[in-house]
Amino acid sequence: MQTMAPPQPAVTRRPHLAALGALMGAVTAAVAIGVAHLVAAFVDPETSPLITVGQAAIDLTPAWLKDFAIRTFGANDKRVLLLGIGAVLLVAAVVIGAIAVRRPDIGGIALVTFGLVGMIATLTRPGAGAADVIPTLAGIGAGAGTFVILRRSLLPSGVDAGDGDATHAVDRGAGAIDRRRFFWTAAGGAAVALVAGGAGRIIARRTAADESRAAVRIPAPGSKAVAPSGVDLDANGLSPFFTPNDRFYRVDTALLVPSVMAEDWGLRIHGMVDHEITLDYGQLLDRSLIERDITLACVSNPVGGSYIGNARWIGAPLKPLLEEAGVHQGADQIVTTSVDGFTVGTPTAVAMDGRDAMLAVAMNGEPLPIAHGFPVRMIVPGLYGYVSATKWISDMELTTFAAFDPYWIKRGWAEQAPIKTESRIDTPRSFAHVAAGTVPIAGIAWAQHRGIDRVEVQIDDGPWMQAELSAQDTVDTWRQWVVRWNATSGEHRVRVRATDGDGAVQTAARAEPFPNGATGLHEIVVRVD
Image (cartoon, rainbow, N blue to C red; front, side, top):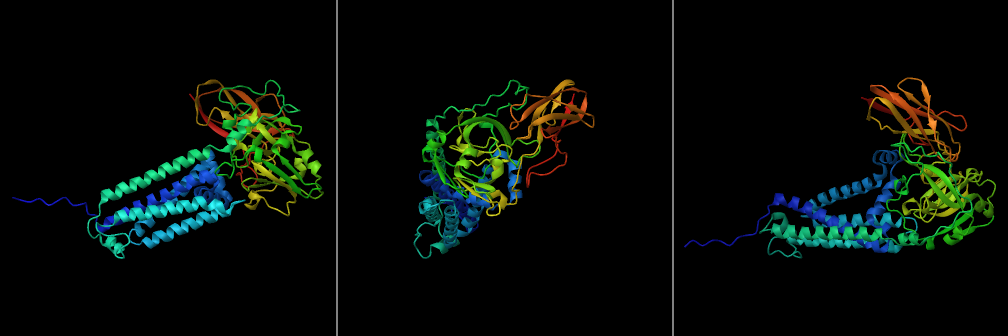
């Protein structure tokens, strides 16, 4: 009778070891990141090494590349950065894993190196403490454990991981490697990474700042904003006069939105002043508050771009606060700092010239959204946000332009950045198909703190047609406009230009946002059927 040999585990030959090692490296990296993210959710979400390394990458990125990212990816720029960092880590982990399957010392060196990078990025954050490296250390520990377990599962039957010949046994493919065991182990590691990372994300979202914001009651302002009738033309496809909070643009350097509780917030006003002032949130709300309609714009906004929004703000006027502090002659710059260390430099003269500069606490009838600066942000009408609109503000120092260069100025952007006269076509969209006949062309125009006096539209190379303007709320808000065009069949080029309250006509000269704001006329192409 023929005797059948018992089934043997599948044998993995040497050429296959690199592929299995690559998977080992990927799972190890995923577990390390997932566990670190979970631990950071309990320590401080901003201490996740993925966030701290990403934040360091933002700070080291040249201005032209940041501008490209904002222009290309819009509100998704930070998500793209994190995905890019994750992709780089994955590729590195795959390559290192393929090597470390035979050279485990290489895997250990790589884990230590990545850990050091994470700790350096964490400890160089503003206000960082020793406890902030706990998530990184936890991630490295979890990664090391995963690496050891996965590599042990790769060892041939009968070879112990502590055996001095283990590396040579793996290298030779001695005995039979149970691939099923390895894949099940790797699947378990991937599940740990997924659960840890997902749980960390959920926990981090449930911040104390959300509960703090929900409990805030904004006092009625002593000076209310009253927009005249007719500020909103209510045309189909036209941006509403007030931008809803969830549609208001967001451009900042924070990978993770700072979580600040109102009861913990404080502001220090110091530097070249007679009297240093400190305020908590309650003291700020006790001041005489004003309500104003103000349009904000980002310097990175390209011609025809969406990084602009109009809202109704409530806040404490900035000028009286500075007068109480007693600003010294020669203090020509106000440097404001966010809780995450981001700095902004604002011309003192502009902040005190009578415009409605404020420390804002509410936006469109509710406490500031967390992503837009809760508990307090600064607003100075007429200046691009990078020199005026500090979110999550925590410090204000009176100094000079000669003494200090804020964040974006160090990266080549202009010190002085008044918002330029601009206009945009909202409807029809570029390359839209419209029916012949009367077609409304509508959009917005802005020249904060100068106002808009006229908007004109040109079809192809024809004469400029004056648009109908909405009522003007204040010189600090945008104005809507509309032209009713008698459209004829064919392809047409449509452009718009505005004239501000000083009589200056919007320039047609094209310029990129860097270093002080884009210029040029917004132009679209439409097809009339």
